[in-house]
Length: 132
Image (cartoon, rainbow, N blue to C red):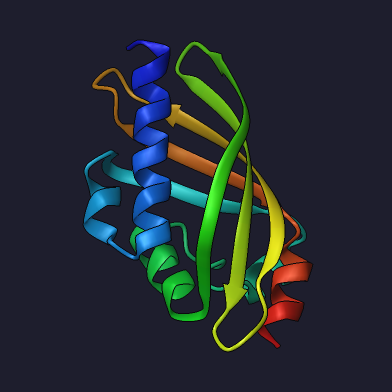
C-alpha cells in the first residue's frame, strides 16, 4: 500500500468523524477494528465513548456531545503499515464555544489496506472540562 493511499484513508475516517457520517468510517475500517483513547484510565473512561474499543460506539458517543468544526493534518510519519498523524482541530461541545485542540493518532493497516487499529493521544481532561 502506498503512503498517499494510507493518508487518504485516514482523511476519510476524519471526514466521517467531522460530518457525523459513520458509513464513511466503515469504508476504511477492517472488520473487528479497534480504537482506543490513550491516557489515565479514570479520565479516559469518563471521555465520550472512552470505555469502548469499538470505533462505531466511540464515534456515536462523540457525535452526540462534541462537534469537530475543522481539522488540519499538521504532520505525518509513515513506517511500514503504521501511520502517525498530528492533527489540529477546532472542536465545540454542544452549546459551548469552539476551541483548538491537538490530537496525535497512531493508525495500523492490514494487508488489504484497511485500518485495523487506532490509538489517540490528546488532552482528554480539556475536553471533559469543555463538556461540563
